[in-house]
Image (cartoon, rainbow, N blue to C red):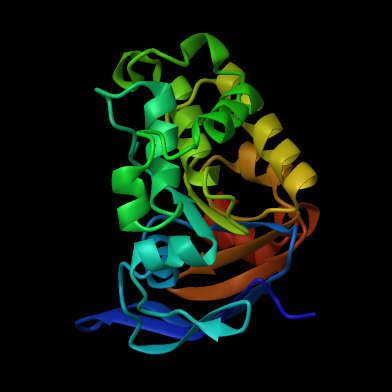
Length: 247
């Protein structure tokens, strides 16, 4: 079976600092992989190398067998890779519905067809399905900027899923979200993963969230992988406890 994502010998340095050091791993269809580590462990640099925001010094990023290292975000999105951001990426002066429609327009038809076609490019129905999935129906026409932070996180997730990606990279989805909304977000991600067979890679500092959501976890420290396994295996790994969980 060809992995959905293969990271092969990725390294990235900034001057004398080696932020990512020869990292390798595979992610298979339907998997929910967690990527954890202390501050400065190289998680964000690795994510940005995978997503084309940084060009690795060496190594390959393979999506379904094709090397996509260094490709720009819009090209990755067209290939089937979605992402959420640590900082919210919604447009605050647009409605929830319009935010989600806009996310799908880039993948729908040609520039000419979008100019000459209906303003929603025929995407309203698909957007409303995601609004219903995330149970945001009552907020459909509200400006995204007027929503609570947790509600905006749900809109952000809906935006990432609008193009029907096969792989979604989630950058600290739990950050700043209250416990009630966090449980709801976790439920929606699990359900989407189960119903659509989508594959997730999650960077997260919230240990309870990542341990209960992810099927496998990779731990980074000083730019290198120090452990990999199931949540239970990671919880009991002494090297992880010493390096990250604080003993």
